[in-house]
Length: 309
Length: 129
Image (tube, rainbow over all chains, first blue to last red):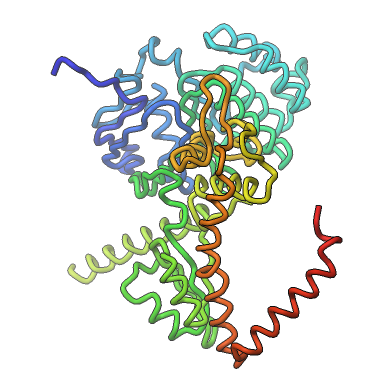
């Protein structure tokens, strides 16, 4: 074809990463277009940080292909200079203070905005001349957040950047992220356990569980795809018939089930007719349910295998 | 405010429609930019844009190149007509269903409606803004 399409910001083709005998990534295929805010979600040890390490050239996959802007990131300065990776436990040289950390970031990132960095320093009330080693956990996180935002890199990875940040500081981070992204669109990959806090900021959600992608969808497509039905147990059961049930809870004659599927007005009316209450399921609840359902599935297969032995 | 029950872009579109219906956004007046909506509601800017664009597609808002987004002439009356259609399904039907459950007859229900009308007449001055 004479008409090559622009490469995706990020593309993974059957990427596997093995540590000794453990598979941190298990044939992961993923394609992320540029200029969006992505949520990379999953439990601790699910493979999020490994995935980001492979994409930022800090690790190399055991097999498969990882491409950033259509090129291999590993030892590729042309690609790495366009990426900013803020790790949960970001290390800085021992004798550095925050001012020096920002100075080196400003030299490395071509789009660095010093005025924006100064504004953020003010808002996070970050002491610039104190050694980074002497900063509190929250202040250390603020250094990373400021570098991640002010660098305006074409792709910015935030790997749980909020440790030690209080609720006010986190809100400042989210607000500046949305504003600055609107003014300077770029690709943001945000890994977080505080899903309720970031859910509305995300355009697309990738959920990873034990090295595999179990959800890869637009946030808007996910919203409203599951509902909690509560009421009389037999009514709940008949209403849920034929639907995928993600979770069941019961108390005496009462039941509360989380079922998949978008409710039509007719179905809402039917639920009301049966005396059932329908409640929306948040992205965080959905992620928990999906992950637990995936775990159950693995446990089931494992026990079936046990039986076969 | 924004909740988890439905896609956010639909909720944004509805919030703007509400402002048009209750007159907070007059016809031919400028509406905030999608980035202002995103910052205010703390949502993804692409999602805010999708909500606004839906109203553009519906002819409720229109774009002036390089200036911004405006409420179309006749938008309010069109939205009102649409909302009156929805009213029966979303309010009247659930109400009569509940009334039936409680053994309230149509005559009693009508009487209640007359009663709320007279009480709201009395309190209207205090609730209007």
